[in-house]
Image 1 (cartoon, rainbow, N blue to C red):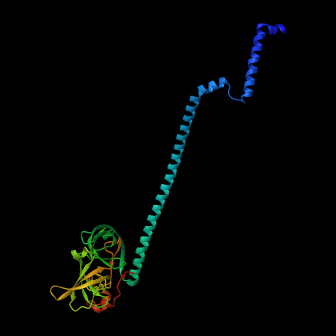
Image 2: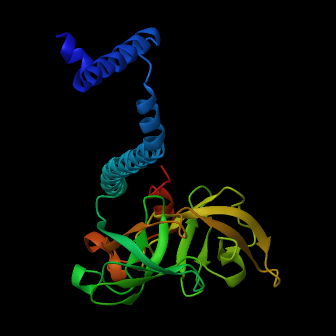
Length: 304
């Protein structure tokens, strides 16, 4: 054994044991800190570890943004579909509400005068420069005739001035082409309602040929006389705003505010038939209706 330790191999073995023992003692005293080789290796690898960590963070962040973008896009699509669905429901609701409103108006008119034959129609185009004229979606194929009266639940609008197969143009109370026999529901004074350019620009129409000694005044309600067979008797035309003596001093004229919202309405009723249409007296009666009979007739469409 002594010969072995004295030999070169023995000395080399003892040197190795001494080095290992020293390293163990150093590690024990340093509390498990890195050894010099480990420190050297760590210093060499640090830049690569930092770059790797940065790359990993960037990839993680990009992946997170991508998945969040996908999630946000899906949420946006879902919200857009919900908004579209709600809009469609609102359109359907408004359509039903408008239809119900027109049916209520028609029912009210028929209750006041069951002899009127009404056809519901919608306004599809307007030519306001032509005295508020507009086009409706009803025509000859729907039973509409030329010169048929047109009204809303509030009162008279005008008449059919042009007739097509599926559409028709309405001449309104604002137009000089329109001439309606009118009578005051409270005083019995009569005259002719027609339009003028200056008044139409103010949303008014005109009553002419009023007797100089007439009693009607501001607030008087005008209804149709029904004497000519062009319009049913008793349809509300409008309200007198003022009465003025004509320049000739013989008669008066009045500014009239139509009862119907002619410029704003989106739906009207065409009166396709009524008692006395075309000058034919109802129930075989002979002669023209008297103004007193017209006075006793309740106004159709009283703006309720």
